[in-house]
Image (cartoon, rainbow, N blue to C red; front, side, top):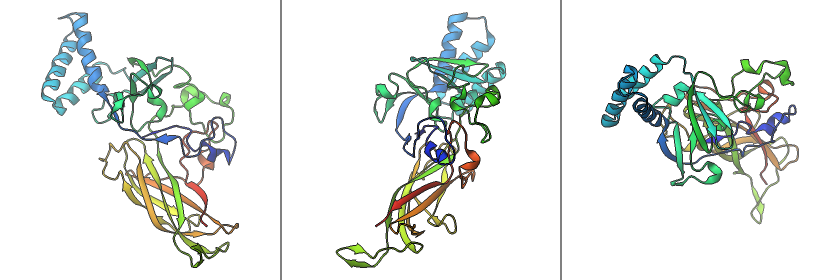
Length: 338
């Protein structure tokens, strides 16, 4: 699952104006990606580099080459981990993996994510079992699961292990910095002291709502609702957490949190702990909901809980930021149900 960092920016705009496209909940999607594990590519590249430099000059390079060859032959996870630990111990100042795109876009990720055999970072050349489409990064893009979509650089032309994060607006500028709610002018803060978005939080949304009770009065029509009364509705939607954390629960309310109903996760619940990279779908067959003043609609809210028991805040006020990034407050939807 990839989600634009500005998804649900429109919810922030209801509180105070932000900068950027006023997305609702649509700037998120999921695909099946295929490619080469980034850690394997880097290890093979180190072997080639050792050969190109000097056949007998660098003992560390030879050790890495030998370990890598052994790892390829046996596919031994322990050897892979030992090799990576050796690389980090010998080069402690390398903290970032930087990407550069054919169109000049530059971004980076933490080296621990890049080199982790469990981080599942890949150089993708397939999407949904077909050749990667041009609009999605052909011929090669990086997929960094559990991270903000901006780190999943398209049209990759260069990889670089570095002591410093990537330069440019996409990594170091205001574009992907979540500033405090009190800041409305980026000139008031030192952007270099604020990290850019990387691993993200937990999110959810509602996509369908319909009424399940109500006395029929003829012609298949249900009795008119009365503002303030409680009716039963069913709802469904999606949820996703960054960092590979599983979504373990989705709660839905139709009375602004006075009572809650638990949604059933219908798709995606079998993802492994720590590597739950895709969204889940949920359904709730019975949610008590208060009829709005128009007599035709109800307002539902949902919140997801992940495997670390992170949840979504009730209001966007406390997480508002001038760029309108990372809105994971309760998702609220007013929907006509007659």
